[in-house]
Length: 604
Image (cartoon, rainbow, N blue to C red):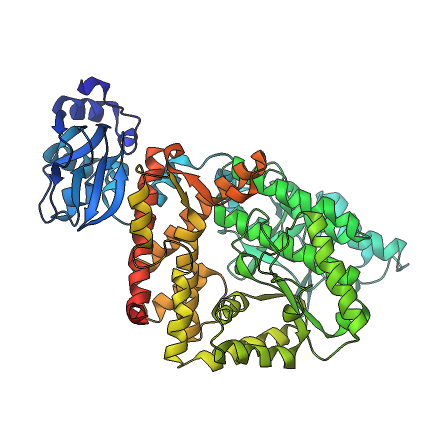
């Protein structure tokens, strides 16, 4: 029977052929009757168990933490860390492979990849899986800039004539030159020279300093290619200067990485800039979404996909704003995106979360026309309306700054139930275009009003229990249903939202102004709200929830069932993914306890 043991089931797929042979020779099989305690809490396990058939429940007192089925492994933690913290009970007739502790510990000492599974930190597990699983475009994205073919740096003096600069480009087969002009260093391209001659009618003898750009966007030679792609996308550049220390050593062009990155996302900003009317932007929006699917299909990390997508969407929103906003709004407005779009954590298009602040009142007819045109255009591009109406078209989210500050104070002072969520949504806002200082002023007012308001922060923190099942036992209640009732989990409600909102609450409490959740976590760990190790666990858990939610979103789009974009069927997950999901949910549970204890939520 042990010969039927599946050696391709994680983490055993990391073992060598000889190591698998050693393990098979030591395997035994155990039978457990319904209700039988397999590993009692407080006792060490002498075996690593792998379920063959049946179902095992992990219980913390009377609460079911998780439900384990065939190919699931337990209890790795008690095998290497000490007595079991929970009880494992056979929920029905169950057969398990029994892997002796001494054999497993010997394999742990010899095989680092296998050993990674036996540590509770989800961040360590994810890093280990990444090393084995990341292929295709992600492998290319994680190459270093210095390892990619690029053009060596060629320098000329700012007084060099346009003619001589052009000649040098042709001789050296290089379309870019660095220009030294006193203390400044700039870049000139063949396109700059062509424009100088044809459009501006510059003489051939004109100095190159007159046509070069001194706003050089650069990247370090030791940075990853994905950082170069993000920089090109963010700054709308087709080339980047490459630094080594304080020196420029070359130029990386989009064509250099075209073969490495599917879809070449840095080309989309050019398409957005060339759009002449809102209808032209629809194709750009579709290209952005297609880029998400391509990058995911070829293995790009979800954080990279989210950063690229956020930058492209913001550029699209800014272009649409310029197209449809009347002069009065363009001159006085600050366009905002909020929610996951603001945090830079959105991949697949979900609903719209946007607004506009105005430096002063504008004609009502102008504002009404803009509200309709902007929200309507985005809807036609495939951005669904926000169910909570957090959109430019809603007067609550598009008004003069002085009126909005009064509204913020009302959200803080009023007992209305929507106040905390509106404040949470707004705290995630970033400015896309226009008067950025308006957003800074509004956020500063919000933080000042809430800082020190312990009772209100507790009320704000209560939103962590917003969704059904998110009361005291949200995660344990969910896990109790696994294998008993619904074999599904809403990863947004059960995983992403508790992390995002809990971190948001602590960030407001501490006056931390970073917007991405990972940046907030790092700042909170630095401030001592929790340890650096737990901060890494929290970031890794969020990353994993984003990853499996993206898979569900793409599947929902493919089947036309958008209402299931956050739903994951546990039976369809691999053994590895179920293991990671259990670890991620445990991290969420610990974090919720931190929030509940800090804000005394048990008294509500």
